[in-house]
Length: 489
Image (cartoon, rainbow, N blue to C red; front, side, top):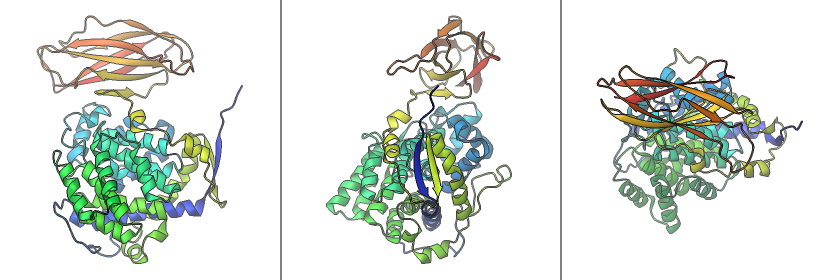
């Protein structure tokens, strides 16, 4: 019997604590400084804080990340996926505005991610709610950017589906992951740019800033170019605002105050842009990059606004506590990546093979689901993806087609038996009642996925939420597998 190969790595605990603490401190500084100017449509000319000393503003940018850490502490990383994040979202995330509210209502109706971020969300799925919460994944998986990207994509698809909003979080987490082990800001940005589709508006916005920075164009002119580039999708959207972050990172040239002020001066979603600039610079340079007067001004407190505190207990109350709890999880997170880490007093020695292994993927690989689909992740027997022919919205006396992609997770061939449970008056006369799935084999370039096709027809009465259930049973199953399929009326 063979044993799994585990890579090894040494990370100096004080060095990493300093980077992670600077990340959260920078996040708090940026969110607080930018907060009073949020939704400004014109260029600004600020000089610093507008708030009281020692009183950081509450910010959803940080709040949601506290919840993601809570989930990992509570049940371990092996169980975390987009469906679990969606379940916690419904129970414990309070905001009801924009994409947050739409995703929450979709989730409550049984619409699973990424569809929860797609359905009736055309206006906001390209907005800013996802890329502003990417730091937690970067700091939990140091030196493993691909794994950070994987979890960031799960996070983003809950309220943004597969869209510009999700590309934006994949991009920011790639920058923040790179910032941990590479101090060259331009190189890290360019590497992150390779992770997302080059024809996406986020990528075009970032490339515009890089090109104009290299030409020496004034940042105010570049800001207006970004506004023009995004004019078709409008205000408060990810492409332009991510561009403002890159303005701060490049034009600030490593100066924390200059970077922060330039990003805020661009206007729009100023608390988000400034918070991301602050957190990212913290990962690049540690606490020494943050001016002492701003450290003293902001203090250490974290004030929450978006998490239901009556339900989620024991959230971190300070940047120090948040950093300590992140570092407690890091050895477990790296073990999940097959890396044994010495997080202690020894010098940080990055394992180049680990970085090479976990810095290969792109958005195309982590966002593998077809359009109008979601994955069933809570059964060990099989992996299943439900794919609709079109958006799952149905009218009276209408026919809809969907298929279930099924891959065996076990080492024996299985015969599956299907039964459809339909709303009253609905029919599905022609689906196949049984299907064989082959045993899982470790062969490259062999797809063992089997497809089950279904056609359902609604009756005269269609409810606002219509639940179809696909029951799968087999001789070796202790209990049936039930796959929910929801159609909105």
